[in-house]
Amino acid sequence: APHVHYRGNELYVEDVRIADAARAHGTPLFLYSKASMLAALAAYQRGFAGRQAKVFYALKANSSLGVLQVFARAGCGFDIVSGGELERVLAAGGRPADIIFSGVGKTRREMRRALDAGIHCFNVESEAELDVLSEVAQEAGTKAPVSLRVNPDVDPKTHPYISTGLKGNKFGIAHRDALRVYRHAASLPGIRVVGIDCHIGSQITEAGPYMDAMERILDLVAAVESAGIPLAHIDFGGGLGISYNGEQPPAADALWKQLLELLDARGYGQRQLMAEPGRSLVGNAGVCVTEVLYLKPGEQKNFCIVDAAMNDLPRPAMYQAYHAVVPVTASEATASSYDVVGPVCESGDWIARDRSLAVQPGHLLAVLSAGAYCMSMASNYNTRGRPAEVLVDGAAMHVIREREDTADQLRREKLLP
Ligand code: LLP
Image 1 (cartoon, protein in one colour):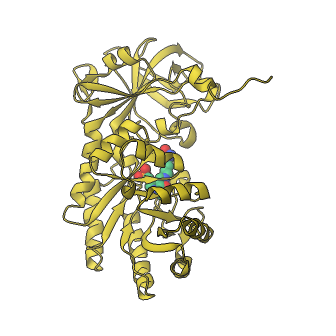
Image 2 (spheres, rainbow, N blue to C red):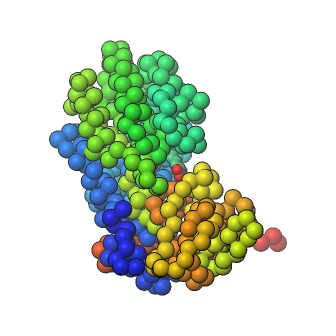
Image 3 (tube, rainbow, N blue to C red):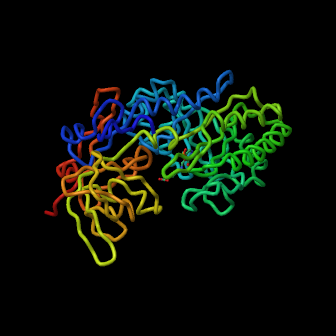
């Protein structure tokens, strides 16, 4: 990523030397490039140029307020999946009318709060949810704007834990049931049908699955509208992948060029179009800086024990995910092969395996592509405080989250009498 680069031996995020950031703010530390986020967004905006189209950032990827401010100021909407995320967007200055609400398990309380706030629409994932939402809306004296999330049943060719559009997934309404559920929705007193959406998975690196999903969704749009139910918008979800280890996913503008050709060919190019990307907007904007604590040579493996762990950066432990790990100060010293592991008491607590590194205790390493699904999935396991986060803008550093201390963690706990 051009926003994370070496100048000489030193690794930088934009114009900030990572070693300086680590000295000032400690480790483990997340650094995010604002320019990288805006460049990623610009690719979608270029792809959508001349269309009625809007990006709704899926903030589950990184929901820190400072990150949300960057996207809100750049004109993004937001895709939320909980009442908590709703409050985050509002706290960051996002407009309720620019919020869509996804997720399979919305509670009545969350629905009511979102209705009162006046969000753009609910992406409804089941018939049962539709009935409850209609009731909640009636109690509130209103009609809930609804888009049905349809499961197009295409294989996104990604990790099974993050593919969501197959028949066996808990997500969405089955394609063959969708027309019936739309009819039901249209008959409910508390529901106003406004659109259709889908989301087939995450870290998708090919255009093919999107094209297949698009065809399947457009077939449904035609069927639903022939049944007399107009669909104002079409939302294609998120899921576009990034490069962690040489993957070459299509750029957002190239992907949308293809999708728009298909939409135009079928006469839907002038619809209100929406997308809900998360990872592709923030993933490559972030690095996690960590200090080497100990080197532990072994019979079969050498371990490089660092101060970041699975609680800070859960993707390797959860999905065997690959993140590149590079020195913050490059050296000519001889490299050895290491597993980079954290201090947490689990064998699953690793960050990278079999990496060639020239390291000594006290050296800093940067875990790359750590902007998405790292901090937002961080936990306090082993009573570890979550890292600080700094947004880099040119040569400026803005602390957007202070390091969590133990007092923060103990605050809600009560001793027995
Ligand atoms: N819309 C919906 C309805 C979603 O479920 C998701 C992600 C997105 C949009 C955004 O997808 P993206 O553009 O970020 O791929 N924790 C996993 C990824 C889980 C994705 C869940 N849904 C990981 O670290 O790989």
